[in-house]
Length: 283
Image 1 (cartoon, one colour):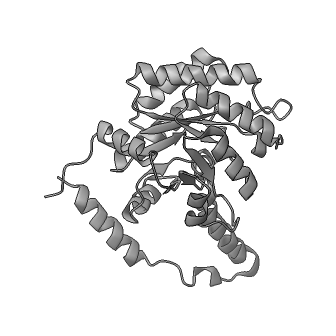
Image 2 (cartoon, one colour; image 1 turned 90 degrees about the vertical axis):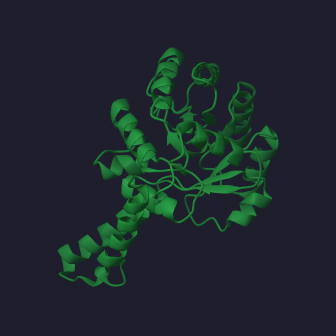
């Protein structure tokens, strides 16, 4: 008889506890199968990836509707027994009131955490004005508090991946977001030890999420030593899968060869994992 599944409240408590000490990896699945497999590997929490999900559905990153993303989050949450953090992009609204309403809807999917970023998606003005960005963070915080306050709120500033790699401005924003009630701070795109340590020190004692989306040479232990509390990988796992697919498909199309099929995981192995995995969840 399978054990009873953890409740939404259980997952949210677990997720908040993970942020209190140590360092943990929060990998990013893009569908139910990848989410279940990552859970099976023993990871303690997961995070959605806007790019990984978008590309799997045939969209550019950021091009999906709010409702599509909410349905995806609901699927991942319902399919897993560990906390899920939502990459909720910019909150699908410019104005703080719109962000607050959409955060409310995101919380209703059962996520244990969510992030809101300060990117406008306009390459000419890539970041929201400081005051508006701060107002959006405050609105998200208020919406979470109104819903009970147990969802972990991560505030992101996107300068380093939006053509504005200014560490001083990044830290200014993260400190303001922390003061406005963000539980966790995140600046995707920082890469060096100096950038990471400066960010961690600036917002301490609040936890920092580091995006390890490339072979930067840092291990989990290295990042833990720098004071990083949470490590995500963004869309990198999804791109690894897509890269193998593209490389092999191109080889078939251009050379008529099937060498890319060598050494891949077997159908039997996947059947065994997902068959046993499903048995554990059946009443």
